[in-house]
Length: 190
Image 1 (cartoon, rainbow, N blue to C red):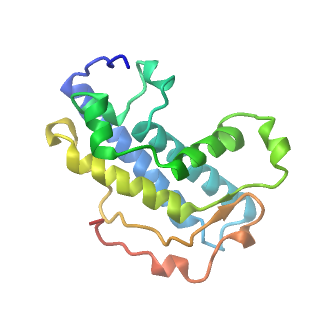
Image 2 (spheres, rainbow, N blue to C red):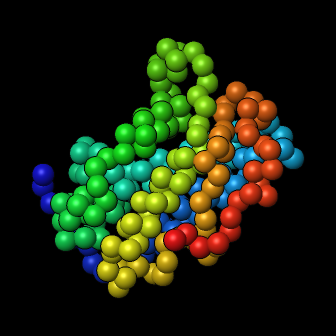
């Protein structure tokens, strides 16, 4: 595997601000999904926002081999001495997140014939996806040299979301709304 171009510290610091934005938007979109006040179309907007930012973060954490050639894309490995160092800290690709990225590709990022074959609109395990990503962002933040970050990547008050939280492109009724919003813990992620 060819090494990526070494980035200057100021580039990594600047990119870390955008990484925090991606994490923040994913969390905010996920937190709005169980809100029954928003109309059905509003639900789709929050679901697509969540999926889009989750996909960006999955790409950041687990870049595909073909993506690594894109010089302007930011990956977690850019913050470490090598791809192998980050992979050793992060661990292997999480199959659940790889499937999420693949589904996001065909249901959101690309107009795909795969949509015709699947017939059923996908159910998104929002809580599980968000928590898996937040766990890995925390691993990243703990492992990276802080001189390359513009502060914490996790937003103040970021927390894990309820594992049962789901989102669907079927209807707003498929979202688990049983007091999920009041159960979200707003403490720091440990």
